Length: 504
Image 1 (cartoon, rainbow, N blue to C red):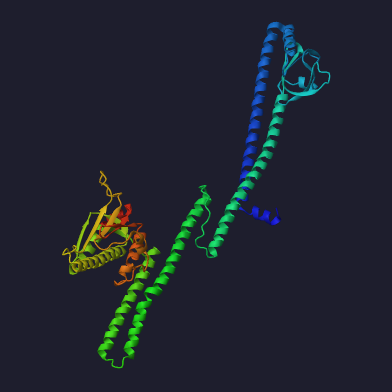
Image 2 (image 1 turned 180 degrees about the vertical axis):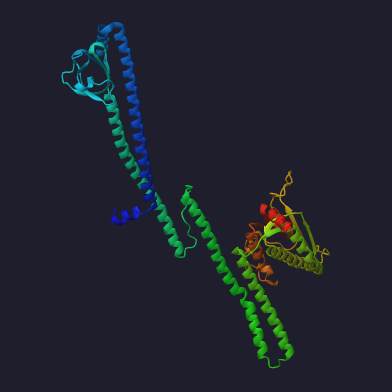
């Protein structure tokens, strides 16, 4: 591995996290091992002292009951037993009387009681005179005799060495495992990051359909990639929409602009032009200009709604009341067109939204339904008259309904959790299934609609308004005709907003 690769690896988050974890776990392991070792040694020392004190008390009782001969007999018997216990009886001059201790420092017998430190000794009967350590207690008896009872601490020393070895082995093993885990994690993390960086580079080079890799592991990298992929899909969709809008603007606005220019050019080139012809040309030019202005206003409004501008204010809205108001507004228009407009709405169908935009969306839907239903019925009547069948189709019918989906909760809670469905149904020509998703895009007009006035932006605005209010659109077949439904999700804040508005 080169120096550059090592420096790159050491700058990674994986290396830094591994180093931090290694330091933390090392400190914790050292503390745990030292704590267990010290407490275990302390516990063993206490057990040794307790055992020695118990033996001293037992031997003193033997001395009191059997005198020195009885004590010597018991000590000789116990000294022959294998184990870590030590016994020694000396006279007033320090000469050996009984026991299994061959030699120990002279100052030990001058002490009284339990000694705080371990003392070296040599065991009786061993030719090598090997030196050991023991914890002892000295007791002075009548006539200057001294009794020493102790326990060898070799087991404690062995335990201490075992702990030291365990500590060294654990430290080495922990470092090795930490390095191995770091290498594994670092390699895995760097591989994922390199894959993300490569995909990001491809996207920056213009491959907008490229997506960040997702391994289905469900980790934070996958969650990040999924969120970024969703964002990239949205950006790609917006870019495609922008391209389509540019193409559609060039296609759909070129014709009226050309027509406007030609009209002005013809009028100016006319030698017999009078004020009346000029006036007619200006009126037609003004009408064409108004159509263009309305088209650009619709585009700006759609862009503002799709951007979810913070300037769009929202409040509690009753969808049923808005639908009823717009239906009453369009009812005279429907009568003039020979159509029948009906509506029904449940009470308190509250959402939190923008009244102007929702009203505009409902108006666009009613206007579309009325326009295409009337035209379809007229075409059917004309066709029937030509065929001579004598049967005429029914009049154009548009029905608007606002209701909640599902059964009403039994508790009658004001925060009704059911979604609200706004439906506009007509008996027009309808829309084929393969075209239903496409008609929601900007400037999309079906072939049969090309001869009708309009810009193809009405349903695009409806789609943008629905997205702003987190609603989804469904298009169905009315047999004949179209059923256009907007499903608004329930919003508990709408009820709170209405209460606040009423209190104000």
